[in-house]
Amino acid sequence: METNLIDTQAFTAGILFSLAVMLCLLLRAVTQDDHPATQRANRLALAGGLLGIVMLAAVNGVIYRYISRPLASFMLFPLILASGAWLLLGMPRLHRYFAGKPRSKPSVGPEVGVEHATRQQQRGLWEELRAMHHFRETLNGELISLATGDRVYWTTSAAEPCLAVAFNNSSTLVVTRHETLVKYVAVQSNIARALQAAGSLKESA
Image (cartoon, rainbow, N blue to C red; front, side):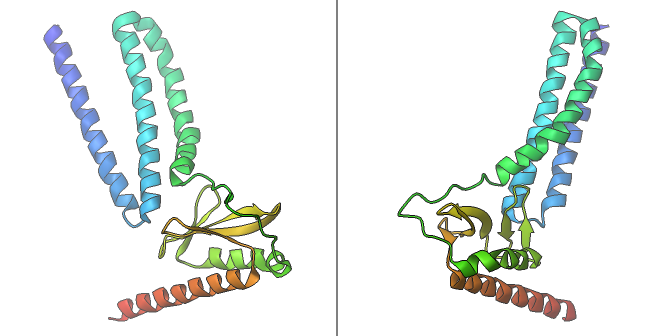
């Protein structure tokens, strides 16, 4: 009887290990074309979701083995529901956390008021960036450039909403001047056209 139990446990452990390896390979294949920041967020969120389910299963296993088998059987279905709720609600929160926390306003120097032209046109320029094929919108509402790694997000300056750009070199620019915002969008437009031309050239080769 004891030998059969050990064989069953070893068989179950082998199945779980194989499934874990397959999930890791599948996740790597699905996210391999994503930006590194998005890859990291997706993989850590999935790892956190799986870890939560494993912990719930381990708790039920401990109850089954050392406390009460009827209690463990009773808790099986609620734990399945809890696992599903964790996947639906917990993983998106983990993804938002690992994708990047909202950035606070710079505290150095006095805040500058937003120019009138910036207030009037920044929403339209934001939509232009959002429509470019090398930009992706994260779950926390930021735009990330897959080409340069820049992050564009909404913040405030002098209590007025405006855009800010967190560059890949860790510096941040709060865009209050209309000319600065227009130039940034123009640069990103040029990058988008260059990438599109390179893609067309590659397809024709």
